[in-house]
Image (cartoon, rainbow, N blue to C red; front, side, top):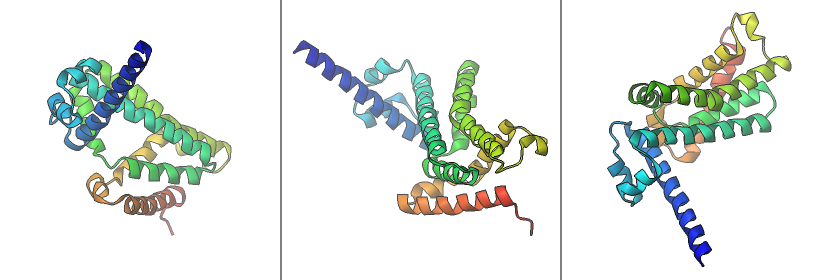
Length: 210
């Protein structure tokens, strides 16, 4: 009986943790770091503030956990795309669609909060995890495309795979429309993302020269 109660307590703690993370992620991404309080998160989660501080030392620690949670999921999803699709064009298309559908958030606000609200050590930590979650899968896609002779070697363009990956991610970020995308139903968002991804991939691979 005691063991069962202990197991139930562990499950409840995990559920509370997930609820806090998911709620905090939505609020931080919608409103920004400074506009959100742990009291507000606790009220929406229907838990006490001490319950939040049981899992997280303070708001900054919670924010870092939220970003890490997002980066971990992104890394797994991008790896899955690389496993499922084989050609450079397919991978670039699917990664572009994924970014547009799943990041209907204000990335500029997120990067601003990270650079202005976190310590240099925490910024360095999150940059390392961002590199692992976002950048490395795109670098892998580029290197595989070069090996299969689907795209030019970055060296022939006087650049590197890493710099080219930054270009691709910045291109995707430049056509994200957080506010308009967030208001669309899921199916419409998917259709719009496919249209934009097709355009981006066409321009990136074939250019616009006649």
